[in-house]
Length: 288
Image 1 (cartoon, rainbow, N blue to C red):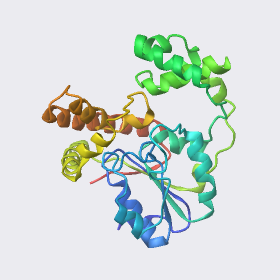
Image 2 (cartoon, one colour):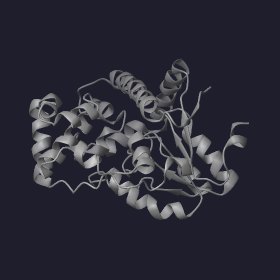
Image 3 (cartoon, rainbow, N blue to C red):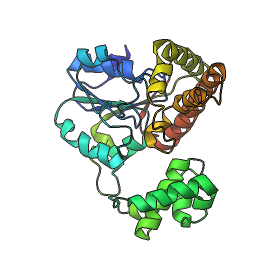
Image 4 (cartoon, rainbow, N blue to C red):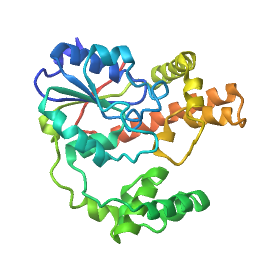
């Protein structure tokens, strides 16, 4: 069995695209070894989404110890740095760290540059420019090394790099070149990345979104409608913007569901591409 080949002593890291079965594997390992399941997903930290981010259910959280899930308010700033600081004391106990946010895992195993906090005025300036001009305008102002290092299609990453340059006068790549030692070096952990077959995963994504709708995803979106701000990181939950658009009268429910399922499949494709590029020294599990 797969679980029999996974270390009982070392910290276990499980990455993988959305709907790939990461949480189920983490639960199995945690139950076997008495580990705490620690969230490494950038969206599952937010309190306002449980269904759409596929956070562990209340029953799962009661059955086994979980940490760093649903503890951040939707309008509260929360970065990879925040996550690492909260994770650090948890590493004193046996853990299985699971999620789909590759940047969290690279920060954990390779280190994270200690960049100063971005002032609110600069973040507001970046938000306004993104809305008015788009990511290409900000990307054009970055230094060549930073522009070559980040994903040019990822608006969040482009804006972050621009904010760092605007706030510090130094490119993000320059800060990254001074990265301190990692909290948990790759060699000290059992690192697994799930890479399911594409057709299997897409079918699973579609089925899961239908299950989310049946479980109350539309009602969860309705609870987020008042004060909705699409620029917040918490608003990037896959399916959230689409269901909000339906509630605002811009899409039919059928259109919103189809758009959300498509967005989820596209997100999974981006995750797989990122994992292949950045986790070459991880153990790949090809499922099913």
